[in-house]
Image 1 (cartoon, rainbow, N blue to C red):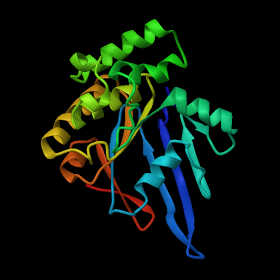
Image 2: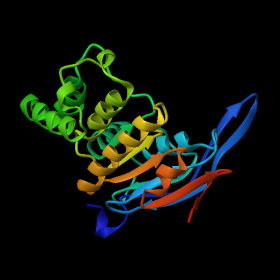
Image 3: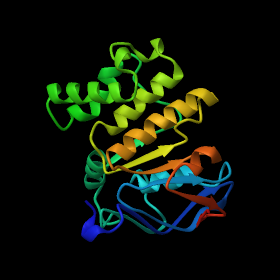
Image 4: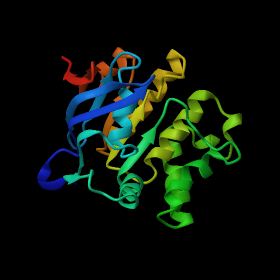
Length: 229
């Protein structure tokens, strides 16, 4: 639980620039947002607006040039690399547009791997099977990724992101690589399990229909986040 009932994630005046062609491109110009316990927030914006950069900063994969990422009341800028790695493993789950499953492992094994770093193999196996069942791919747990459809692989990737029971899920266009029918199905499965577990989530999407079904919708434009109504 976050400190004193505060937000799970607090982004404060985040700034990030990249050097290109000898000049600096300012991607984030003071982006701020809060995500409460159990809240599912949509993140939209045009291509190239910096949504992925924002998620990488929120996920402690990069450091901002300015501003703060505060996770469960803990300011993350002062953390050492090993502390950031530990916090990512214990507190955060990641889902990407491309599933990044290991092709030589079964669905179950792909899901088990993150949990096995923290607990026993038997517990990892049990919880992996539970998640795969809940996400509708329990019958595919022995199959390897090349033997599964795109929608099935993305469900496995979602299970992998949830297996360590994170407090916050960060998803970058999790249905962007799927056709409309599969995108709807995968999104509904993701939303159901997130709500059932009272997980907080920040989900980047270009799909405004999906965004409208989340608790809140923030848009990134010209490096600033604004609430959408």
